[in-house]
Structures are given as structure tokens and as C-alpha cells.
Amino acid sequence: MMVPSRLLTPQLLKQASFKRIVTFSTKPLHKETANANATNTAKHPGGNADSRKSIAPTTYRFIYPEFLPDPKVEWRNPIKEKLERMDMIDRRTQIEIPEFYVGSILAVTSSDPHAAGKISRFVGICIQRERCGLRARFILRNVIDEQGVEVLYEMYDPTIQKIEVLRLEKRVDDHLLYLRDALPEYSTFDPNMEAEVVEDGTPVPINEIQVRLRPRPWLERWERQNLKGISNIDEYLNDKRRRTALEHEKPWEKFDLMKQYRSTIPEEEQKEIYAEVYSQLHQMELQRKKNKRKRSFVKPTKLA
Image 1 (cartoon, rainbow, N blue to C red):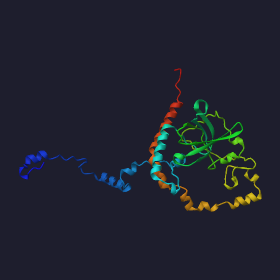
Image 2 (image 1 turned 120 degrees about the vertical axis):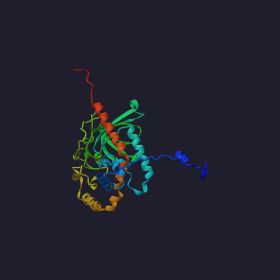
Image 3 (image 1 turned 90 degrees about the horizontal axis):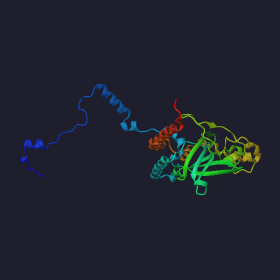
């Protein structure tokens, strides 16, 4: 409503005026407080946002490698990667996916419409872990009735009901596919094997065992892959095969910075990705430890 200026009296202006609300202190700051604030501002130009930003541990890149996207540029899609990480976090809230590595012994329980009770449980050693995002998968191997059996599991498959780590350890190689040509004793595990109890904070042991291969033929030319987990590979090589293996060696690749850059995710981007999911993963770890303490407590049947 428009009011003529000649009708505006001091009393009317006083009634229509709004009180000013001060949301900060008007008292003068002490000299020490002012100097401290100036120092904090100099250290953190962005304010308190940087100090509150969560920093994920450096071990996350080994514990949760599937959260890192594929390093190939032609397959990168930031929106798809972010949506996949959200789906992976949602799946982890439904099922506990523990920490494991190549060489760890796992027991996976999954739904199987053809099994008795519609549930199957397979125990084996993890011989390979590959891919990223929702397509992450791993392979378990075991020798049952003198027959090598391998099962490939999609890590975020909704049919998986439970993943147990029976023995947590690492191996000296990135994969253990050569166990297919090794003696069966290195891939034989008891289906009723119980989980080994390990205290929290214990470093993951590295099993430096070297397996013995069976005579040729082999599924792959293992002599060309510079594997450290095979002990008798030279027994089945003649001079021609040794020369051929030397011809296929590429010792200069460890100095190829561009190949390393194209096959890995930059460290700065890794920190951003794990900082995005750190709070949810850390909360799940705390809940897992809490549930573990509840299971370990046994209520006494008889009180003193």
C-alpha cells in the first residue's frame, strides 16, 4: 500500500520500523583472540570446510579397490561412477563384504535354485580379483574329490547372502591362476574349515610359499610372467624356451611413466573418491566391530 509522505508521522514510522537482529558479538575482540583467528585463516584460507573434510586412510585403496574407476579414458563417466558408488554403499549396508586379498581363504554362501535347501556354500582360495565398480568380481578355487573346482562370484551380486574370511593373508603375486597347473595340495581346503580368529589392528600377513607345478602342458606360459610364487619352473624349460622368454621380457616398462599414468588413477583423484565414501565405510566398520563384540560375548548360564 502506498502512503503519501505528508501522512507519515514520527509515531507511525516508529511503529512500522523493524528491530535489527545482530547475529554476532559487537564487543571488541582481544588482541590474542584476533591474532589466533588471523593465524587460522592463514593456515586454512577456505575456512572451516577444509578442516571438517574427512580424510580416508591410505590403506583404503587396497581394502576397497573396486571403488576406483577404470583408468581407461574412453570408459570414464563421472556421473555413472558416482551412481555406482552410491549403489555399492547401499549394497554394503545389506551384506557385510569383509576385507580380503588374493590368497585369502573365503567361504561364500549364495542362493542356488538347484541346490538342496536353495542355498550353496563354497570354500576356496581367492586366485583372482579384478574389475571395478558394480562389475567387481573374484574367483575361488578348491579341489573336491580330486577335481579342481572354480567359482566366479560377482562381488555385488544380490544372490550372495554371506561372505566369510576364514584366513586373511596375502601372496607375493597379483594373481594365483598358476594354481590350475600346480599340485592339488596347494588348492585343497576343508569345506568345514573354521575361521581363524585375528585381533583387530593386526597387520595382514604375507604368505611367501612357492608352489610346484606339474609337468607340461600348462594353460599359460608362466615363464613369461615373472611370477615369484613358483619354485620349479626352470625344471620344465629348455634352452629354446628360455631364449623365447628373454625375448618377451620388457624391463623398460617399469620406467615408462606414460604407461603408468594411463593404467592408474591419479592420487589426488583417489583421495577425492575415498573422501566421498569414507564416512559411510567408516560407520560400517564401527558397526561390524560392535556386532563382533556382541557375538563373542557368551551369557553365563549359571551365576556365582
